Image (tube, rainbow, N blue to C red; front, top):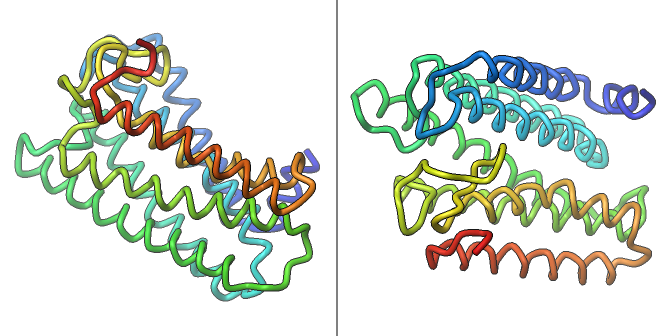
Length: 253
């Protein structure tokens, strides 16, 4: 409770928006056992659940981290850009699930193509916002937190941006599966392909460096060097998983 109280104090806008996303994710989870409709071989509420969960965690993380920037005007602007882009991005994903069709890589009709293009535009704006946040953390020299933590935040944001660009590769391929079609057998919950390479694995782990690296820097690392070393190892692991997927090899083979 102290954590959530502090999170609300730091950034009330992102606090409430983060909880909103997690609440929608829970609703999707509750609906799954009662749903028979499948999209690409999985429950139609699975994708909205994953995206609302992931975005909820990301938003709460951003709310916590932006507090360390000493420019309140920029923080307010960044916060609103995150809320606007992610509200409509996830809104379109769940709308397509309600319509019983896919949201990403869907050009099967004029309407679906428009939805997909709007989503691409929203993600572009969000990515630019994330880049500006990352730059702000690298430009700011004075922090009230240990250097190990600062570098966990900086590298977490940098990797978050870098691996978010992998989404552009998937858009170019109109697929997240390498060596076979999207859909089919996958790991429980995440649905990562058990037959072919899946770009979502590296994408997922890369995006969540936003949580992993700051946590390591704050709670485990004693020095900046330890944070940087851990970050390099983490990056190599995710890069290897990306290359494995590009060769069409599933995570478990």
